[in-house]
Image (tube, rainbow, N blue to C red; front, side, top):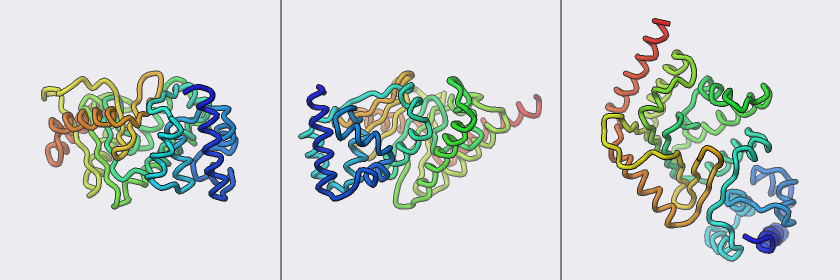
Amino acid sequence: MSSGDQHDLGRALRELRSASGLTGATVARRASMSAGKLSKIENGRILPSVVDVELVLTALEVSAEAKAEFLRAARAAVTESTAWRTLRRAGPWKHQQAIRAIESQTQHLRLFQGQAIPGLLQTPDYISAIFSRRPELLPETKAKTVAARLERQSALYQAERSFDFLICEHVLRWLMCDPRAMAVQLDRLISLSRLPNVSIGVIPLNRRMPDFPMTCFVIHDDRLVVIETFHAEVATRDTKDIATYLDIFGRFADVALYGAEMCELVEHIRDEFLTQRESG
């Protein structure tokens, strides 16, 4: 998107807000962003991400049809990348709040993980261990980030929404925190798998892989995919990209263990951690 397109997009969003009668502060609050950031977007000083545009349009209560038409007309980038260093500078807890805002608009969430237990399923100890890794966070920043991630988990108890998680077995075996905390984390997985709107599948090491588990990703309904890489978070609304990730998710789901088989495997790994603790 050129700088001219960037300015046009910001001006169009500003005109939509003005027509709605809402103040910038109100829209920014609803969109989980600062009033300063919204002002920069509206004045064309920064290019909003796909997620930013989605949040602003939702805050303005734009219909799904008008939202789709606006995005096309504004020539919003269908794919964009945000470097992790940029998100860290803005405040990692703010990123958690933005994720929560997107998740709140999602009826069916599908998440594939080959690197860590999904954030929505993590225990406080596991979350703390994740955010204790480099680059190190200041204690206050870490506490706010852990709290923000835990707040996201209340969505799991909203019965009208559904969550499908796929986790590679090796993720459950990686010692991200001490063995006792890992055992508690795995018990948490088993417990959450019993929620009627939550499905947890584990892809075992002894089954043929349908593809390379190159990266983790989350599919929000059939409208948005967010992919995590080492250097950045990538979001796409391209319909062909979304279809690709839906196909990948389905093929991994076909080889995953669910229900009693999944619980048996997770319990076995948990018991191995408990043995490590006793022997240690």
